[in-house]
View 1: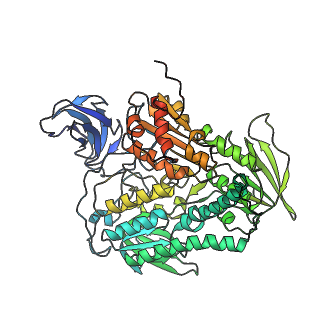
View 2: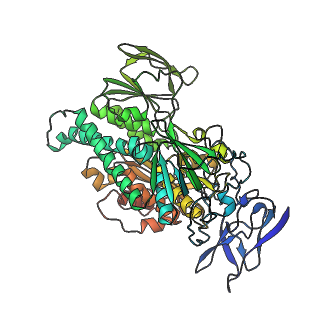
View 3: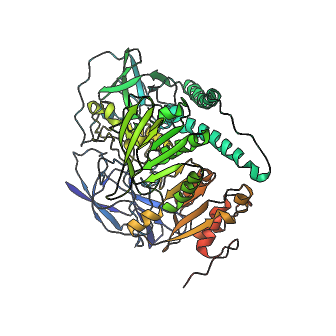
Length: 637
C-alpha cells in the first residue's frame, strides 16, 4: 500500500477559497478523477479530483475551511494491484443503493439516494467492431470480463459459436433499458436489446406506470362528474363498459410501445424477444417463448431487468381471484367487494380506480399509516377523501388467513400490535396483494458473468453504475431503492455514456416520488420524518390550498404545499405537495434543491397567478414571514 497526498491544484490567483462541499469520507473507495471536495470562489465553482484510485485514509478539510494552491485535501491509500473500480461501500449490502451519498454537513445533507461529484469531463467517444476484434469503447481487459474484486469468479466461456455479436448488450427494455440502448446507439455502439415482452417498454409501459395512469384518468373523470352537481351541472349515473375502458387503456399503451419500436429501428438497435441468462463474462443466452435459444456475445452490457411484484405466502396464487398489480390492470371485472392488502402507492392507486368503477374497497396496512415512508400530514387529505368515498381503511392490520370458497375469498385478519383490534373475517370477490416489489437480480445467472448479487436480488454498483465486473453495468430497480422509472432512465444514460468512454458519475442530489392517487401526493428531498430522525434543524413553510384562488376555483382545497429549509443556510432541502396535479408541481422543488436555492430565490421568483404552482412560492413566503395572501404570526426572535 502506498500513500498519496491529494492537493489543491493551481486555481489561479485565488487564496482562501472556501470548501462548500466534501464529497467523500474516510474509508471511501475512490477512482481516478473522482471529485473529493467542491470549492467556490466569487467567480466559479470547481471540484478537486483524486489523482489516483484508492481508499481515503485521511481527510484534512471540512465544509467552511478555506484553502489555497497546494493545500492537502486528503491522503489516499493506493494498491497497485487493486482494480480501478470497486463495489461501492454500503451500510447494508442487501439494500444495494446505487451510489454512496455525498458527504455534507448534517444540517444540509439531502435525502438523495445517490450523490457524487460533478462530471470530471467527457472522454473521446469510442466506437468499434465485434466483441472479438479488440476494438470498441471498453479496454481489452474490460471486454474480456475484467473482474473488479468482491464478486464471484466468472464461468468459463461456453465454447459455442455466437448467433449474434455486439458491442453493447442491454438486458431489459423498460424505461431504463431502452434509454440505455438508445443512448449507447446514439454514441456509436452496435447495440442489442433483449426484452421478455413482445413490445418494448418493460413493466412500466406494458403493465405498470402507463396503464395505471390511463385508468386513474378514467377514475378522475367519473369522480369529477359526480361532483359537477355542486356547480349546477347534472350528469346521470355513469355506465361502465369494461371492454371499451380496457381498449382505451390498451390504446394508450400501444401508442407508446409502437413509438419505442420505431425509435429502435431508427437507431439500428437490434431487438431480441425472450428471457436472458448469462453463461459467462461475455455471453448471454436468450430463450424465446417457443423454447428456442440464441447465444449473444457482447463486449459490454447494461443489466436493466427490473423487479416483480412480491407474492405473499399464504395466498392461493393459483386462484385468479387473487391478484397482483399486473392482474388488477387487466380489468377482468369490477368486483363487488375488493380487498387491497398493502396501503402503499400501488395499492392506493388501484383502490382509487376500483372504487371509482363501483367496487366496495377495503384497504389493510400493516404499518400505522398509509404510505409509511411519507409524512403523515401529506397522507391525511388522501385518507380523508378515500373514507368519504366509502373506502374502508384498517391500519396496523394484516391478512392472516385465506379460505378460498366458491362464493368468494374469506379473509381473516389479525392486529399487527399486541392487544390491538382487527376487523372480523369477511368475504371478498377479489383480493389485490400490493406489498411492494422485489428485484430480479437473482434470476439472471449474473454470477456466471462475475457480477455480485445479494441474497435479496439486488446488484451492487459504483457511482458509474459498474458492477463487480467492470464491463457490466446495472441500473434501475435491481440496484436499489427507490424503484422508480425516472431514476432508472437517468442511471441508464450515465451507464451508456461511461461505457462509451465518458468520465462521469452520478450527480443527482434528489429523486422525486409521486403517488397518482386522488389527491396526488408528491415529495422530494428531506421529509419531516427524516429530518426528525436525523436531528436536522429545519424550518417548514406550509401554504394551505384553502387560500389558493386556483384551488378554490376547481373546488379542490384539501391540499397544501410545504417546503423544508436548512435553518443555518436558508437553503431548501425538501418539500412535499398534496393535491390535484401535485406530481406536475414537484419538479420545481427538485430543481430548487439541485440548484441550492435559498428561500428568497423561490419567494422572489414571479409565479403566474392564479395557479397551483404559485403555492410553492407562497410556501417559501410562509417560512420567510413575507406572505400577504395569509396572515402569518410573526416569528419570535
